Image (cartoon, rainbow, N blue to C red; front, side, top):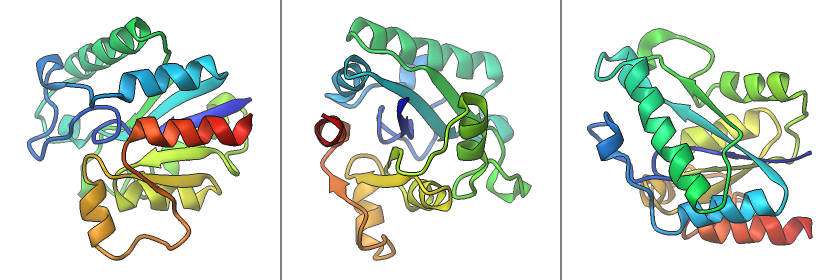
Length: 180
């Protein structure tokens, strides 16, 4: 099975330091929907792994998160793509859960639910915690400059061998070309 794991905020849609709290606030980054469509059409299962601490903080509820994801699924479908599953951590940073990135819990759940080994699976994120979570399970981390990507690059903590891309479209093109 060809699989790719994507972070949501900052990779697929614009991020906000005030959180994405409603479907109206969820706005796709130009080219991201088409990138997911390209991945889908190239035979990849596209899975999202996202920290959503706004739930734990009481900023929005599950119904709102479901509505945000329904909008994302609909817009991806209209672009000719598909997101096969969304995995998320609803906990705050101080909760000590195992699913909040940079911990491996979300990635382990993906592996378990899909019955796959994540070794070498492309995982696209915009933050150091995305890269760390991917590395912890042997996935192949990729950083995009959108969202928190430039801050992550400037932070100087990014492992040397992690490839960096302008956006999800560029990353998707490389992912697809490496499997042809």
